[in-house]
Amino acid sequence: MMTEVTKLPCAEQTPETTKTWMKEYAVNRTVVAVRNTQGGITAYKLDVVDSINPKTGRIYTEQYGAFYYSGKNCFHPKGQTWVLVPTNAILDAIDAGKIWMFG
Image (tube, rainbow, N blue to C red):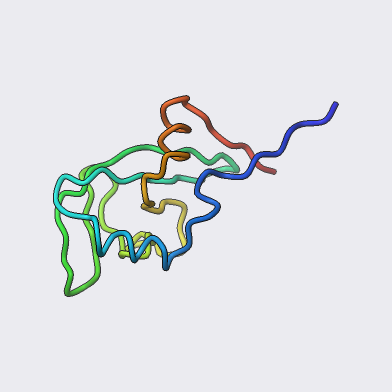
C-alpha cells in the first residue's frame, strides 16, 4: 500500500518572503499563521499580531509570543514554532484540521 506524500502548504514560503510580507502587511490585529512541528507532526494554527517593534524587526502574537519578521521564534530561533504568511493553502489546511506526520 502506497501512501500519498503531500508537501506542506508553507513549502513555498522562505524567511525572506515571510519578512517582506510582515514588513508590508503586519499591523496590530493582523491574522497570521503559526506552524508547530513536534515529534514528527506538523500542524498549523491561527494567531493575531498583538504588537510590532520595527526597530528590532519583531512581531508579538497573542498566543505564541515573539517572532522575527523572518518567521523565526525569537527565543528558540532553531525551534519548532514559526510564524507564517496566512496563505490560502495554509488557511484551507487549518480549516480542514489537517496535520502532517513524518518519520
